[in-house]
Image (cartoon, rainbow, N blue to C red; front, top):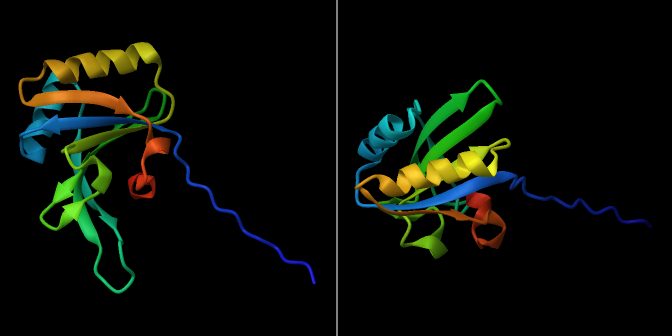
Length: 139
């Protein structure tokens, strides 16, 4: 008897920026919008199930779509009152997830502008493949 196996792989084809900032999510979102001329808007919370028997943990999420290039930006909180979205990155407060292609020049511009904001201690690109809890970032 032949056995068939189903192999699942995560779509981690996105750019991930980790942000450490001592600010509320809506305030940080407003400052990013002003600095980068983005138009982040509040979206439905990102829910992650850690255990099947328990309710999901909800993390605040903001969304911005650029029609030219069809680029999607998400600003997601890494923490809530019950835990972390990515527990191994417990010093990080927020993530920006960029779906679709973005060139190095645009990415460097975004990182430079983010790091110039007074509320942000550091903003850096992270490789999502190196994270243990990377499946929590799939939107």
